[in-house]
Length: 158
Image (cartoon, rainbow, N blue to C red; front, side, top):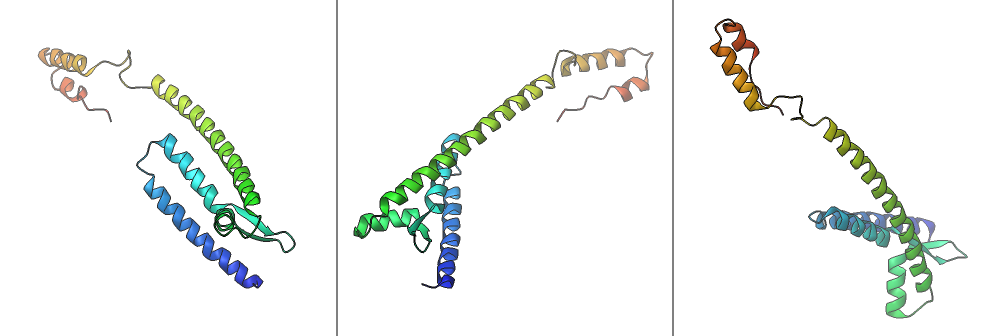
């Protein structure tokens, strides 16, 4: 296998793996977030982790393919190395995912606390019923006339 064939094979595998990953993303989009995201990380690790096949030539291959072929055909001893690579990269990926989840959780808590402070309908703001009763009282008072109708429009909040 020449260098050109090697790069061509990896390019084809990369496109196919990204296609499989896209299909997996579409298949898991209906799930709850905390089930969906770890499954996506797991499949990304399984599809994208390479392992070394021949150390003298520095040739790499997908770790899942090496594991499957070595177990099915019992031809080499690269299966344990491939499983070790999968496990190591899986630990790294899940560690980064847990860090991402922790940061997202902290940001979400801060955002919800800020939203609770500036939420509509707080005590200083009159309710819709109070506004309409004030508008009716001012309309009944003839002192204010047409000016009262103009200033006391009740509009919904979005």
